[in-house]
Image (cartoon, rainbow, N blue to C red):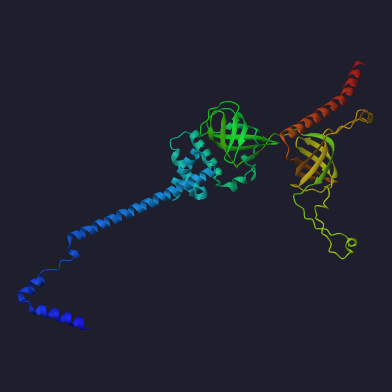
Length: 425
């Protein structure tokens, strides 16, 4: 307080010592501070401009980094889906027209993909030929399946399976290529040269003209059926054609097999995928020593399947019509053992030369069941057959048909001869 009072008194004394003219001049002259300095104001403006430019540069760099990260994420996901360059370009155009902020969103956002695909097809096909429109629609459809959009709905379609994939085609198998967009006018045969996680490599039988935008339909004969799927070209060096994989494999019936009535002895047994079996314990005689009984695993007491006698009444390649007394339902699996030839030898021939029967055993699925007075008549389709095994069943079916025709010819021959004799007399 003493210092403040001394300072105030000193200022008052200076003011009182000044003349009126000096007081007026001091009142008219403003104090020159930093706020009235032109250089200071200019410096502030320069600093503000520099900060604004720095803020704009940082924001632009951040946006570029986000775009770069989005592009990298898009490329990574495209690599995981094994997309070709053409498919990546189409998907980028779809992402641009869908209005999403990050283009990799179209891999998982169904609505965004469909919105962008519709706009792409509508705007890109203005003034184009119908063939080009159909080609783009096919490419978008193939791209939709490859990235997994609508995968569940596609798997529920007729003739399709959730488990089949082009990755399951073994090496050295033969396939047929059918052009879907442009390219060749006839199917081309090829051999599977390699099958990796990323692509299916085919050894072409002949040189073909292929472009990276071509879409092919591949057909692979698997037993009694044909696997069919659409795919796009990854690369082609004139000999090896690399195709992208497909999980949308369609199951096509190979052919309608000839059905021939036969009489073949057979055995059938239920072969379910899962059974509930209780653990067993040994008898009381084994536990007189006071020790705890040892549990017996169900596998040790399972035994063999219980076969029931049956008769095959119709043979049609891998399809069988079986009559049996076993209670079976449609969709169940059964074990089937039957005589492929079905002709019994004469006793003297069997003793003199010996006779062997060819027994066929395989797992089949019950496709249809018809109840009879005694038992059931079920249609069974054998599964897991190789191409050679299917061909052997077809050969046996044809042989049975020839045998029936020969028997009918022999039975009709005496009748025709007797009629000719009556006419002669």
